[in-house]
Length: 208
Image (tube, rainbow, N blue to C red; front, side, top):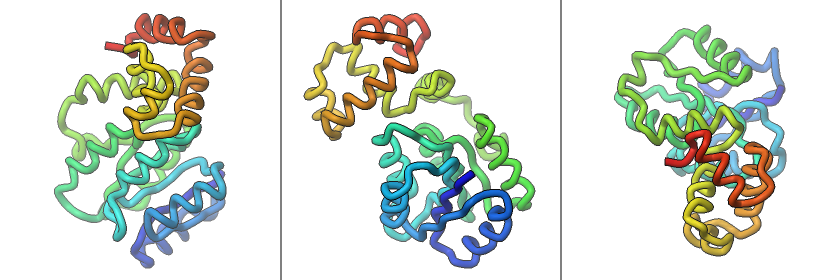
């Protein structure tokens, strides 16, 4: 198992490393740019622990970056600040799978990591109090089929009958990335054509 910790506070990073490195290989990045570089160099991380308050960018920027990749490892967002509910909700909507507050007992961090590594989600009730929106429910449903939020967005454009170039322009990504997302959608939905992909997605409730 390989873990990437994105954390700018050295004390916290070293503490978490001591807690977790016995059970998995461990890499640390102190900001978004370093994290992106590590991911580009090695895309095989099994889980990412992400501080959502980093010095060079919000952690959400890294989530957005991950959406452009064929793989999206489970991301556990963490923070030591109070009143971060909105940031956590935003991270959840962008594909994060769990949340841990640094004030909690370390046992909850270990529990969260175990849950995410087995395909689950870890959202303590006291941190997420509102009912998920329809978009949140779609994202959660899509995740059951191995479809990332970014791929779900491509699926919606396919439903609008947009061509790859148009989708790339709308999403500000390359056509190659669009093709990669479509290929992943075909595999996830057992489809061979764009129309078949959309038809299956509609039957499964992935398209409103």
